Image (cartoon, rainbow, N blue to C red):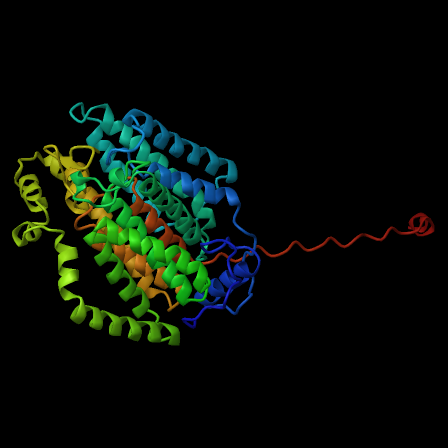
Length: 450
C-alpha cells in the first residue's frame, strides 16, 4: 500500500471527524490494501456506533487518576475515586448495551491483558495487601472486559484514533481553562512552576503524556492527508505549548522517538514522509546549533547534573526495591496491586512496578504484550495505520522507563489498545442473502390431472 492514503473529507471539528461518509470510504480503502485485497472488496462498511466513542471517553476518565496537584475547587479524593470508578462501571454497562450479543474479535493484546489479571489476583487474595488490592483487581478486570466488548469494532481503521484525540483534547482544554482562571494554582511552586491541572488533579507528566500523544497522532494524520492543516494546527499548536509548560522530558523523548520510527516506516513508500523527514532533520540540526543552551536548560529544569543523572531520585527507590527481601511467591506473583509506590515513594518505572505488584510472571506477560504488538506492526505492510501503531507502541516503550502504568488500567494501556485496533485485520463482510425464488403455483386443472 502506498504511504499516502486516499484523502478523506475535511473534518468539521478541530480534530479528525468520525469515520462516516468520505472518511469511511478512505478508511475502508486503507484497510483493504493493508489486507492485500483490492479496494472495495467485500469489507464491512457499516459505521461504528457513536456510543463506542462515549465508552472510550469514559475509559479515559477512569484512567485520569485521583492524586495530583491542588485544584481551584478542593475535590475530596473519595469523590474523585467515585467519579472515576463510576465512569468505568458505566463504560462497561454501555459496552454491553452496544454489544448485547457479546461479539468479540480475537486479540492477542486483550488476551495477554486477561492473563495479567491472574497474577494480580493471586497476589491480591492474601490478607497482607488488603481490600484495596482486590478492588484494583476488580477495576482491572472491568477495564479488560470493556476492551473485549469494544474489540468487535477493531478493524484497522481510524475510529479509535479520532476518539483518542478528542478525549485527550478535552482533558487538555480543562487544563487551559484552569490556567486561565488561576495561573498561580496551575503552575505551583510545589512542582517547580510546571503546569498542572487546576480543575482536575493532573500532574505535569500526565499533561505532557496527553499532549505528546495527540501531537504525534494528529501529525501523522496530517501527513497521511486524513485531516486539514488548519484542523491539525488547532490541535498541535496548543498541545505543543502545554508540553513545553509541563517540562516533561519523558513525554518529549517518547514523542521524538515515536515520530521518528513512525515516519521512518513510511519513507520507502511515501514522498510526503520523505519530505517531512528531511525537513525535520534540518530543523533539528539548526535547533541543536542555535538553541543548544536553551534546550539544555529546559531539560535540566534547574536541577544539578548529579540529580539529573539519578533520574530525579528515582534510582534510589529502584535500588531499594530490588534489594528488598522477597519470598518465592512474591518474586513470582508480586505483592498485589497497589498505588505504584514503594516505601511511600513513587516507583516511576513500569517494569519495576509490575515486578513489585505482579511479580516475574506479570513482567513476562507485559514484555510479551509489547513484543507481540511490535512484531505484528513490523510484519504489516507500510501504511498510515501501521505508522500510528508504531508511534504508540514506541512511545509507551520509551515512557515505561520512567513512568508506571503498563501493569494496571492506565492511559498507556489505552494507547496500546488503539495500536491493537490499528493492527487488526479487516473482517470480510458476510455474503448477502440470496433472495428466495417464488414458487409458481400450478393451475387447478394441472393439479387435478396429476
